[in-house]
Amino acid sequence: MSAISVIDPFNVVHDAKMPFLAQALHPEVVQQQFDRLSLWQNTHPVELQAIRVIRYKPGRRCLIEYDVVENQSVVTLIGKARAKGLDHCSFRLLQLLWHNGFDRDSCDRISVPEPIGVIPQLQMWLQRKIAGTVTTNLLPQSSGIALSQQIAQAAYKLHQANIVPRRSHTMADELQILRDRLGKVVQLYPHLSQRIERLLMACDRLGAATPELDNSGIHRDFYPDQVLVAGDRIYLLDLDLYCIGTPSLDIGNFIAHVTEQSLRTLGNADALIDREEAAIAEFTRLSSSATRVAIQAYKTLSLARHIYISTLFPERQRFTETLLELCEQRLCVACHCV
Image 1 (cartoon, one colour):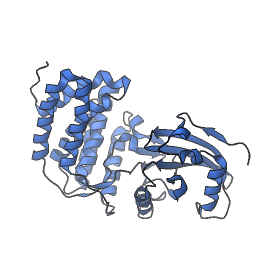
Image 2 (cartoon, one colour):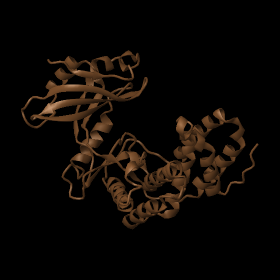
Image 3 (cartoon, helix red, strand yellow):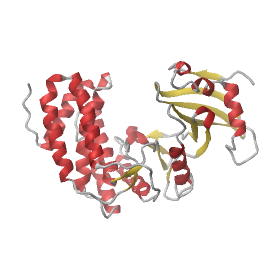
Image 4 (spheres, one colour):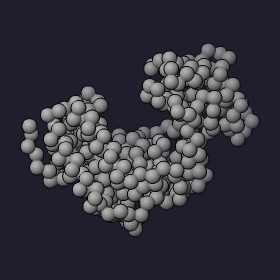
């Protein structure tokens, strides 16, 4: 085997909770595993060219890119490995979607990446990488309104896929996650404790007042970075949290991320409001059960979670209190700083 480039900027080979990563970065081992897999429908062998670790959460999970030569062309596979074992469910979900209207030739131009195979020895499953642009970078452009409509169509298509998940997510789950995350903000910023407690009480009231709608399989982590544009086709990414829940959550989460992006990058939370409105209008047109009330409620809860997310990145920390103020305004919470 000729020299294979291996790039490991995170030094994952020393992760004691994922000792198999050393093998996942060993060219000869990986080539042997690829040889054993029925990765491709033809009989041409594939040749490993390069290995790159692209994302890593110590002791939890790792994403690795593998460049391979297939039929004289270089393609990239993404391997998803995790410490607690091979994620058969996510791989099976992608297979089911791929074979039920989400393949690369779907007539509505809404797809998922092609599932390739599993490597139990490496606690990893593989999908083909899509060369494209995440919609986060495209929404502010002139085509952003039409793109928002297409994204709403993609969410609706996923909700109609009729694939029963093994997990569920309720409003109570959403509120518990929010309380946990904002509790961590209080630890960092004790002077915000009273405001955050009032905000959480208001979120509880909002959750109780939000109507329970028909449930289906939902993405549950649906935001612009999870939607990729490749030519005239869009791809849904990272369905690891797929579960039974209310479809309004996906759209509310999506538009909350647009609001946060608008605030952080354009200095105005409403700078891309027409994109948000386009997504809401298209989704409520398609869905007989979705309502603007529910979508806006989940937008507010997602924005409240962004208060916590802002503390995780140095460049976003200056927006923490601004996001808190925005959520207080949406929930009409009286604010008296202490």
